[in-house]
Amino acid sequence: MSAVGTLVEVLASGFAKASLYAMMALGLTLIFGLLGVLNFAHGSFTMVGAYVAGLVMVTFAGTGIAAIAWFLVAGLVAAAVVGGFGAAMEVGLIRRLYDRPPIYQILLTFGVTLVVDELARIVVLFYGMQPRTEWQAALGTKPAFIGDSISVLGGTVNNLELFQIVWGVLTVAAVWAFLTRTRYGLVVRAGSEDDEMAAALGIDVRRVFTVVFALGAGLAGFAGALLMWDSAWGASVPLASETLLPAFVVVIVGGLGTFRGTVIAAVLVGMVDALMTYLFNEGIVTFSGLPELTIFLILVGVLVVRPQGISGLAEVGGH
Image (cartoon, rainbow, N blue to C red; front, side):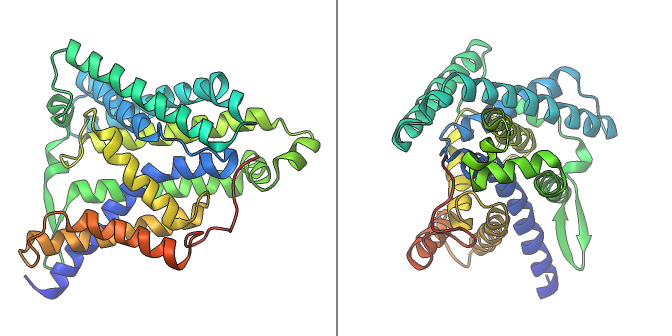
């Protein structure tokens, strides 16, 4: 293969991974940016979204182009279900702890993670499925042409990677437009900067908190729908922890609570992950854990050189 073809393959893989990382992390950074809550249940939201979307696809999906339309429905249903759960969690649990030290919120969301994961495990076992491996029925709803590849400048690009890039770009653009081009986005940014001043101006900050938490959870649910068709991830109970770690790495590297930093960090981590995966697949490096090791080395390096992250401030979030 030519050098250009190899470059095309690595870039396509890198942007696809960056799209997935951005979708996993954007909800997390929105929640921290406004509420100052490190939501350890975010990975469980993604896992539940994958199962909900898979259930819709297995029950209703057709084949070919129809499956793409049903994927959109499945993604929206997953986002609505997980977003609704997130809103209920914010109102019923997290709101009571805003005046407590952050450790209370961390312990609470970690406890929610344990409960949600165990409930998911019980439900999956009840229906005779293996909780630790990908749900093959949901994976099988992927249209055949999504699994095909096309040739670009001598390189081979998987259609699933292009599909993930499209959804990643659409999600980033939608969140950016919401934050910068809508009145409610202005309210969210005002609350993030100074919630007491926003409340003094008559803004119902508590309702904004609930909406943002639901939005962040919904983004995690939609990311789960996208992961459902990726054999490297798939719908499984361990998906919760598998997505939580890279999401936290991206949010911390980008700067806690910053939209721009999260997008930049997602691209950085995705490209490095793709390059290291290429080196391993080509046998240039034989250590299989190289992509994960390199990602965490990026995290360590950023924390040493710039502890607030790429675009972060010295202090952000909280109320």
